[in-house]
Amino acid sequence: MSDWFDAGLKLQKQVLDAQRKALDAGGHAVNAGEAMVQAQEATRKAAEANLAAFQAWSRLWGVGPW
Image 1: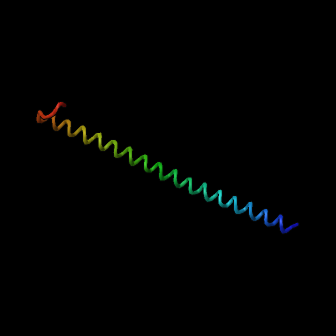
Image 2: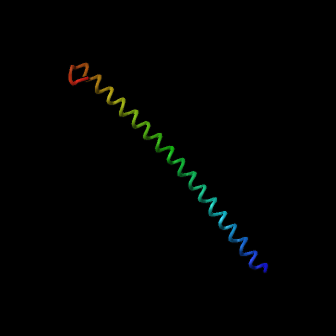
């Protein structure tokens, strides 16, 4: 009877360890996702700045509809 109980405890510990590792991996994925969002936001801001600079240059030289 104790062998069955010991086996059950070992299985539960393995399941808990696997769940803990899955949570850790999920935390790393969230951190990577946040970094990706920050990179996308920086890229968007850079693209908007480039567009504004191009429009200002075009206005300066009287080129384009801006």
